[in-house]
Image 1 (cartoon, one colour):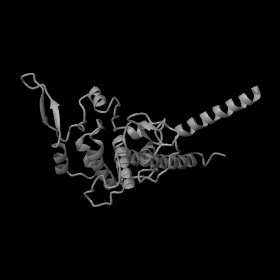
Image 2 (cartoon, helix red, strand yellow):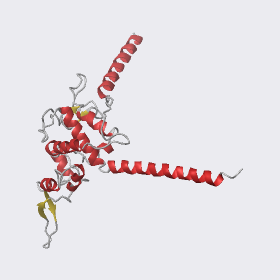
Image 3 (cartoon, one colour):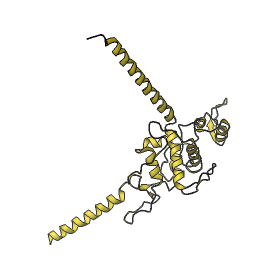
Image 4 (cartoon, helix red, strand yellow):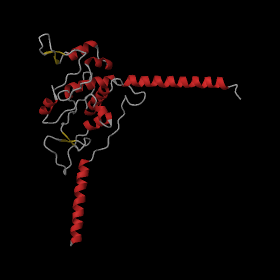
Length: 253
């Protein structure tokens, strides 16, 4: 009888742990081919421009990008007039003025992106206690980088029957713990691209991911070019040293 009870307990416990592990497992990231990957990778400016549109229309209501200035958009193909127009859509609290008072003014190209909240407390109150992270470095701050973000935004699924989702949370196969406070932000045609690119869910996710990779490392292309120049320099120096060595030691027996 005791043996039967032990067997039943073992079966129940093993089933319990199996359910919880399977419900909490994080799916493997599906690797993507990004144009900026590799030693000779380059940014796709058209994709980044579309991603900026997605950020403005979908993400900017909750998430800020505090390390990029509007004038930096010139590096991905925006004209000076376009940048001035974009910046002028936002107001910034500035000052103090000559009277010692703070005042509102229109943003300028030299200003950093204007965030949706004045402070962290306001952000938490607006999002039921959850803090929406700044997206400036999001692809650097998460293991997997661009692939993590792409898979996360594609990772919203119906939860397993054995998993209880907390109030205000959503099931996501990629997010640690599989429960995320952010509802699925991207669906087909949530934006209408100005360049008339078909706004499928996958295309939108790719574009906003490319944009956020750029915000995390806007100097990526310059760094790669510098790396190539350094390698070429080292190769030339090495060949020159080999030539000098042979000339100096050619008569030495």
